[in-house]
Image 1 (spheres, helix red, strand yellow):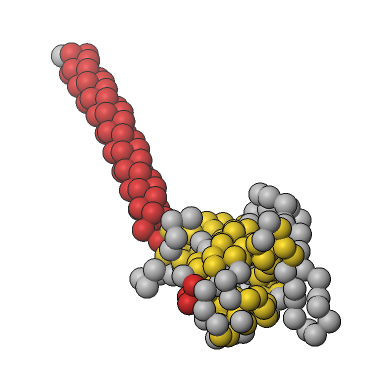
Image 2 (image 1 turned 180 degrees about the vertical axis):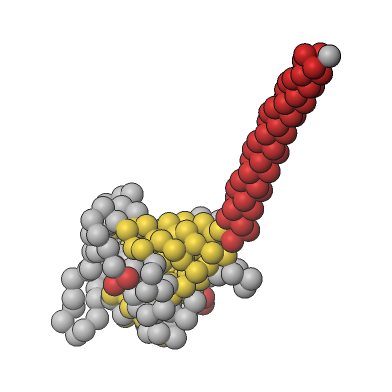
Length: 248
């Protein structure tokens, strides 16, 4: 009788212990799976938020610097538009060697990355100065006549001038021809982003970058003194102008 009771008690204990062990294993596996799912989902959510945040706050533009001050640069883009890029103490300026904000001068080709602002400008995290894609044209100035004005060279009855533009002036700043002369002007942009205009004779070159040039031709069919100038931004008001005098 006592042996039967002891045997029954031992069997019951084994069954209960085994059930508890199996239940513990199942619970542990379930808990681990839940933890992995939660951690994985949380990580994916964080990655997604980071990617979305990067897209939402990112900014990227590329073009030539056309204006600058101690806090920003203005860049002319390939599509003809322009954007302001704000600089800060943490903005990285890069080139083939270490760069600084003082290297960001008008006429430089740059690529900027940073945060796009609501007004369309960009607060830069980095600005990359790109190497020049072409050799700068050598400014050509016609010989002086001795009276401070520049004379034209004559070829096949055409009065030819080379006008060199920099920021912010033209050389020569005065030219003289006679009424009826055919005039050819080669505009050489030595630096910056400029054009050449002479409204009274309907003369206008495209806006060109430093190192490029453009040619215009016209007939001086009226007498007087006429102003030629650069129409980009405030360049004319800043002194980028000269005079063409047409005499009898």
